[in-house]
Image (cartoon, rainbow, N blue to C red; front, side, top):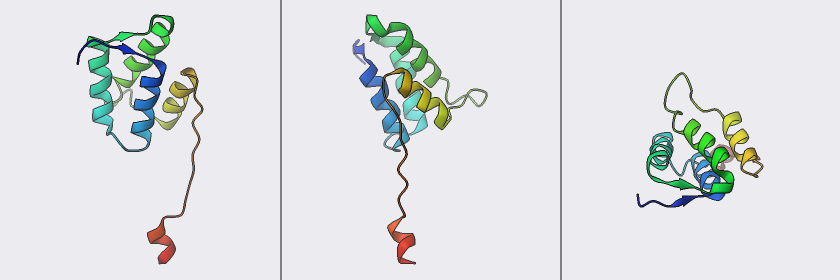
Length: 95
């Protein structure tokens, strides 16, 4: 990964991708670990971004893990609000 600036939007998008199952927990953790080693955080959000990304990087450790509430908290600190939409599955509706 070429050194790049990581923004609130970048971290929020990765969290959303994980919550929508577009990436696995392993992929999210790998991204966070790479970011911690190789990327720069926007200076005005440095502490918030570093803290959130470092916690995401530990999500695969059983003692730490990552819950829905953790993701909701991360997104809130990044300036986003998480909501849940529950829909009946079309396969269940047909049964």
